[in-house]
Length: 394
Image (tube, rainbow, N blue to C red):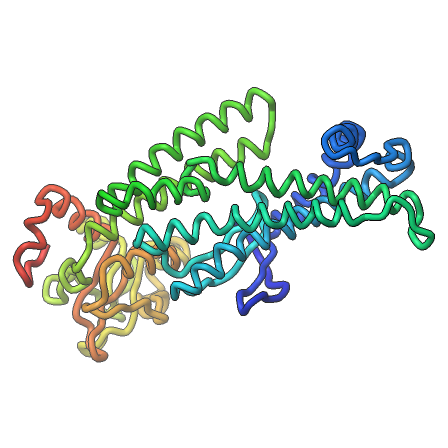
């Protein structure tokens, strides 16, 4: 998702709009308005709606009704995500936000449950709510009067169209989300069922593999019918399935492993003094194949300097500036007793490649992406042996 902004909250959960939602809403409205005759005929046949097609096709009514139906659809999406969120909160999992975006809605969990029963209940809650929203929409369709002195005829036809259309759309939304295309709802239900009799990480790998197969099918079909939304959904499913699979595998691999187990201790670190000139620094980086150094002054950690910092002033600055002039003094630090998976999440969130390890105000080491990948390789090759002996460092 791109830039999002908060528009309110519901049950204490921030409700946000992604900028892509503002782009896709008029597209949905146009599609519904453009196909209004075909859709109205279908609704008349399916529900005996008796919608006056000529009336709703006149003037700006196709676009007014298209926009109304699109807004109603996304309100249904909010309720769908709220279903997931309220069940998750009942189990004690906080929800950071519900965001409407290009492909619908997403509830941002601070932590995903690993108990299969909890995940099953959370995942299935969304489709169940969508079905209830569909039933409610059908109820409003049934309750719409055939005539009323205070409602123009076009208003009645418009309500019949929107309510019956939303009844179908919400039930379709529930059915579509039940496809086992992880990380869609059906895919999460599949993972929950797989996790009943196998490790959570293994269940995730299998569900993600099936999700990627569905993503390829969606993508190929989207190309065949030239459906941009379906193609975008295929990319999202493929990337999200791979990303969550990687995160779960890393979490399982680094279970009970702390930052202190894999960091490079201070005694083994290459550091640089704050008064070192930038030309000497870049020459040293080339010679030692390092792109970042902790900066030490009077024996204390004062900053971090990277290759990007050294190059920030251009060629002319190499002989004029020192490390202290360009270093970063707003340091990203972490304690040695923190689980490695939290360090990984921090690096991903902050888009950085290293964290300085500080205990009780003292600089004790450095952990980098390279340290993490090396440790992961060792753990994968050694299997459970790496965790068999308490205090073993990888």
